[in-house]
Image 1 (cartoon, rainbow, N blue to C red):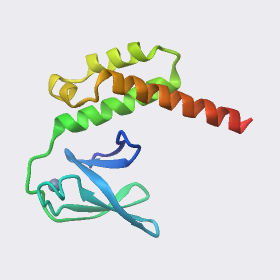
Image 2 (cartoon, rainbow, N blue to C red):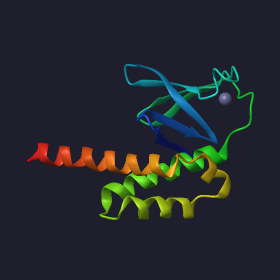
Image 3 (cartoon, protein in one colour):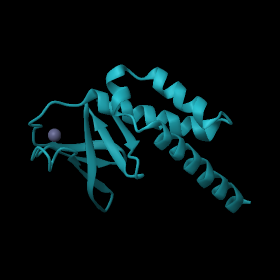
Length: 135
Ligand SMILES: [Zn+2]
């Protein structure tokens, strides 16, 4: 089972599983309850419970198709963030790398170029802050 986590633009963690995205519902002790991202929009009842980043329980069925393009876009943004932290490349270069890598369908789902550049600058500013803090 392919389970991955991505971060939304607002810094919220999302779970990707089998082509669907889940948002965090609640955390109880070490269990994290996730609900399908379409729970409101489509009244989807699919739920997942994870413990230590592995799946413990799944319930409900999706009443809609998964959105592979959206997941690709979310994963591409993860790469952008990593790239931003691990290199000195310009935001412009990082964004152009990301747009080249994703499929056409996913490219449509990516945030705007100016938005991505801002994300890169924010991440680097935060990293700088923590580096100073650690000293
Ligand atoms: Zn669903």
